Amino acid sequence: MSDTLTFAEIDDQHVELLPPRTVMSMFTFTGGRNGGNGGIGGNGGNGTGGVGVNLLNVNVLGHQNNLAGNGFGGDGGNANGGHGGHHHSAHSASPPCGCPTTAPSDSGGNGGNGGIGGDGGNGTGGVGVNALNVNVLGNQNNLAGNGFGGNGGSANGGNGGNG
Image (cartoon, rainbow, N blue to C red; front, side, top):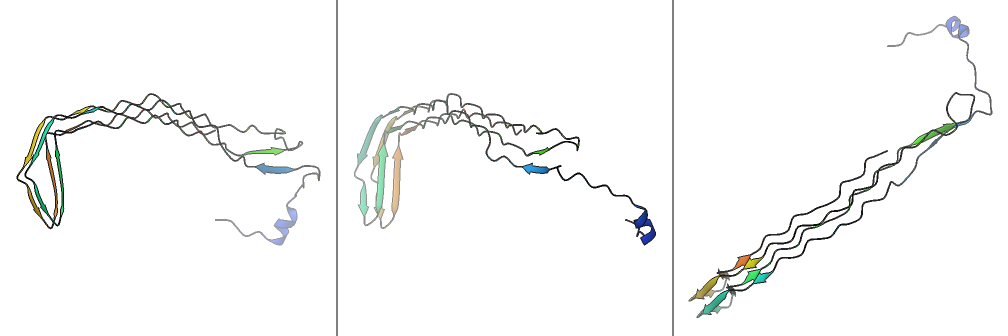
């Protein structure tokens, strides 16, 4: 908490103004460093069908999907570049205030480059039989003997540091 000054105490204070040629200014730099380059995305997996039989499936006024012996490959992985770092502010002042003429402004680092994304997994269908499925006024999905490959892993670049 501050104390209240009397007029006599204020009169005893000495204030020295800076010469009129002294200039202090603040600069804000916008934008940052560059983001990293994208890497190589992974390949999608292969899908190989097996043996599938759909036999005597009945659908009345509905929606019916019968999948048997299908193979579905997984998606390839991502390899995105990282984001660039950000600039920070700097100030400049002309002498005689003691500040350097131009204070340095650290630049943010560049974003890391993306790596190589993992390949998607392969899906191989087996032997599947959909038989005697009855659907009336509804939705029905009948899956038998299908193979689904997993998705590939990502290899994204890291973000650049801030300056």
